[in-house]
Image (cartoon, rainbow, N blue to C red; front, side, top):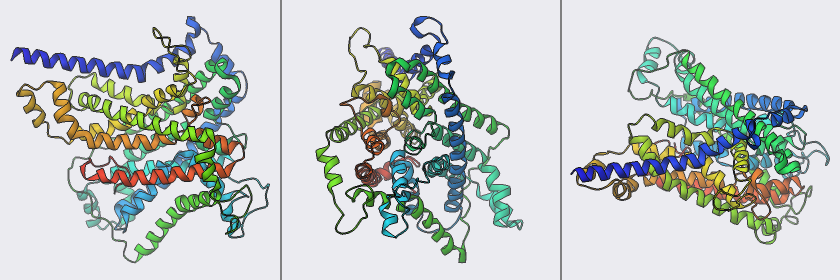
Length: 567
């Protein structure tokens, strides 16, 4: 018996050491390397990189622009997401499942695809506007090339993120408080302002903080809309500096990336301070409140809600599809001009595009498989271990995803600029450095649902196996993994969808032969080949939608909330 206990403790120690080693390699090491570059470049203290970054006006202007679009996009996202969450959750609106799927889809689509879709919908060469006779003359400036255009698309992109978080809070709204207010004669507007919104303040504030971090770190939308208008934010400024200066400006870009991280973390800290100013705890476990009956207002409300879907999803994607079918810029779409040549070109004729599909597929697949396998043992410690340091592990895994992707990309560049010690292996300017950054950044997307799965598992079966003498590794392999596998695999599918069209990280890490779908798409648009970019984007939208539907097959076996588009 003593031998079995000793063996079990030994295996737990091995598991802990392995988990800590993985997290240190993927999370702590790159962040420490980034900080070292700022204060100890070359091993000696120096502020040259900071002074170089702040020497001109570019960094200050980009910082101001980052704050403008970050705050503006956040406010719009909160307004849209919270309003939709209130209507969908608190009323008897019909067709909620389909509506939620459609409303959440912009969050699952890559930001650069969203930007391109809207550009093709409103631009002077828009086949859609030409089709209905409303296209402005060629050469007219696209109205989306502006700060307001960036804010609009950031709000639309991250409105679903706010929606998901606020809706999760609304589902826990206690029935008795709402019914007591209504029994006292309060109308629904009074109930909303005096009961619902005050109780939802923590969810709304948390959603606003996450939306702010996402807006500040977004690269795709400011790149597609801001660079043509010379409206640079910090991520696009870093991209331009690296493209023009290469490794020589890594110290300067390291400071700018840390500056983005500081701005993003300021939003998180502000959220934490605001949440502590009042006590929002609800001492109840009752069922959610009954939905408000819309009555004669149901049809107008449902019509308005689906018009929102038409405006933010259907029309932009329709415009994108039409652009992918025209042979060239500015050519109207008709039965005579419609062609599939753009698809044929990007799939079979363009070498970089072909490599990009191949690279992105295997990068996304490799990241997803690694995350699923690693999330199970990490989740075991996070969910079931009673040690206080487990919280630190969880926070360390969250760090690369909580910070903007630009920060992780610069950290990876600095870490692998030289060969890996003791091996001589050089992964700088290869596809492997992108894989490393993906592994670090997206691991948490598999860990979250896995931990949720652990919390819904009855641990008695695992404990019975332990009493019977099964070691930790055997229990993980034969009992734990089969039970949490659906949740972990669902997380892996989310990672696959996210990484397949990723641009923020790969835009700074790619090299010739290591292109990704997002990078080639961006290159096409920057080079004036919008039809090719539209064809690639349309392909990725279809792939994303098919993966979302396929993932629904796992829904009966998953904890609530793992699939964000499930009602």
